[in-house]
Image 1 (tube, rainbow, N blue to C red):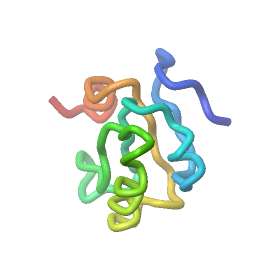
Image 2 (image 1 turned 90 degrees about the vertical axis):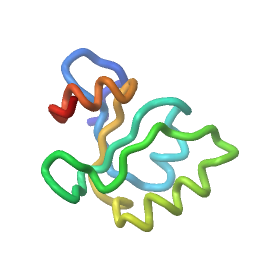
Image 3 (image 1 turned 90 degrees about the horizontal axis):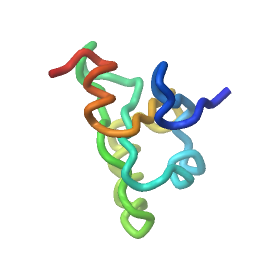
Image 4 (image 1 turned 45 degrees about the horizontal axis):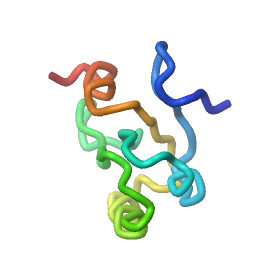
Length: 86
């Protein structure tokens, strides 16, 4: 079950498919569940406007974060709060 972006108890989570990614609203913060270390996801960026998504999707694939669990936050501050990063 995918929960709505911005809910109080945590981020929206889902499998990072191209369809899932392309349907996200621009401006939300996307973080992969794949990580270089426990506090550094391999991909963490604001979702670009639709015109720039293909380039962003290529970056996601380059980090091998596609087809894996990801988390969507309302903004970077919510991501940092959840991940415990200042």
